[in-house]
Length: 109
Image 1: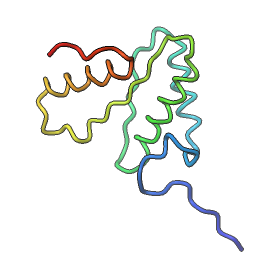
Image 2: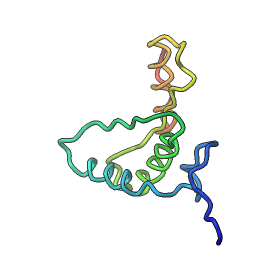
Image 3: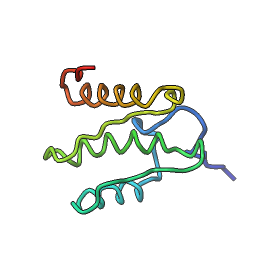
Image 4: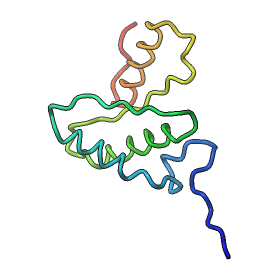
């Protein structure tokens, strides 16, 4: 009797690789929400180490392909290392990340 390997392993995020598997329902729901203009927010939450970052990375890649018409520009912003930042520093880092992802110059400080 052979045992199949569990694709859900603890480690680095896999949203940008072929190792990402099994979250089609989440991707479908996000695309559905974006198809309805009255919806304007999505929150992805859950326990540690369950794959939230992998889902977000995959969504960024998928949304960039799915929304080639230019309606959405997904930007991944990780708050993991910013617990000690002031709100102003977090917002400045977020603004710089968005500008960089969209190919704009950094906003003035």
